[in-house]
Every structure is written in C-alpha cells, then in structure tokens.
Image 1 (spheres, rainbow, N blue to C red):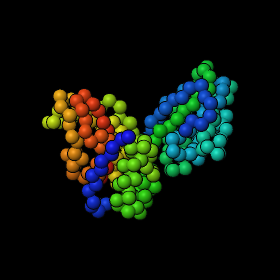
Image 2: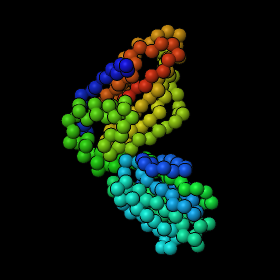
Image 3: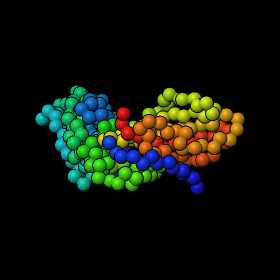
Image 4: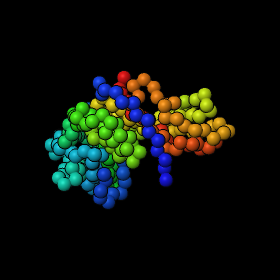
Amino acid sequence: MRNIITFIVLSSLVGCQSACYALQIKPVKDNQTVFAKISSKELSQIFITNDRISSVRGIDGEYQLTKDEQKGAVFIKPTPLFQHQMMTVFIMTEQEHSYTLLLNPLDIPSETIELKPLSPTKKIAEHWEKTSPYTDLVMAILTDMVNQKTPEGYAVISLGAGHVQKLASGMTMQLITLYKGSQIQGEVWKLKNDSKTTQTLEPNYFYQDATRAVAIEDEKLRAGDETLLYRVVDYV
C-alpha cells in the first residue's frame, strides 16, 4: 500500500465512449487552431475531455453533422463535393471554451478526435477555490492528483520528458504534470534516488515560496528507486 505523507502550509488564499477505428488526441488551448484528419466517406467523432460540445460552425454544404446530445459529442462527414478539400470548423463548449479545427478529409476509416483542454475553466475553478474551506480545498486537489482525477474546472497538462533538476542529496526531480486552476496550480514531480544510499524524504525539503502543500508517495527511497511528489502552489 502506498504511504502518502502530507505537509500543508495554512495561509490565506490571496471520453471516447463508442467503438472507433483510430483515436487522435489533441491538446488544445482556447482559440487555438488544431489540425486533424477525418474520414472522407465515413462519420468521424469529435469529443472533449471533461466537457461537452455546445455548437459547431462552418461553411454550409461542406459537411454533414450529427450531434450526440447525451454525450456532448458530434459526428462529422464531408459532403461528396468536399471529400478531398480541407475544411475549417469552429467549436464552442458548454464550459465556454472555443477551438478551431482544420480538418483534412482522407480515404481512411472513421476517426475519433479527442480534444484535451489546456486552459482551465476559470469561472468554475475560481468559484470552487473561493468558496471551499482552505484546508479542504488543498486536500481535494492533492487527492485528485494522486488518483489522476481532474479538480473542478482545472486543466491537466502532461509535460512528458522535461528538464531534470539535480539536488544536492543525489536525488533528481522532474516536473511531469500540471493541474492549472484559477489562482492555484497542482504539480506532479518524479523523484529519483541517484545516490548509493537509501534516502528519507521530508516534505518540507520541497517547500518553496508560494507552496501551499506537499505530498510524497514513498517516504523512504532506496538507491535507484523512483517515487512521485505532489505539490500545490499559488500562481506567481
């Protein structure tokens, strides 16, 4: 069983659900244009992680559109005259995000396009941050990060292989995921013990300015082992 230790600084707070042949995952920011391929002859699905499509706009006659009101997804297919032409559609969501899709019809089977928002829903995140008791809020963000869930209104950004920081103790740390809210940000770090001895990890060692809470997956780390660190910070 994982042993999570937590250090909190108390201070004032200033899916693709149907069968599909291929899945394209597109991280997207508000008002950003994203390129995607669709089938020229079959319906392709578009849906948004943790959100619902409210409207789709494009040039009349270029495509056939079917809405799935229950799931908040849409299915799109070019009309015969536009099976080999690029088309642009504008998408609005229930959480007031807007995206532009540049779609390239190809002679391929049905595609599924998942849009993963990189921008938080600030109205929802801000309301949650301001109305929740401080300690409850911080613990909820930590719990969601540990369980790989999305806090209310937050955007989850996977950073992949980024810069590795070397610590004096022989440890290294690498930021791998961000959870962006309105005034608060969650961070997931990968810690590795590159020393030759077992390390005892203290949460307050990873405290910096604007840090509100730290949680560590494993308190003791043997030589060569890795663990995860979760940190909640204020935007600076």
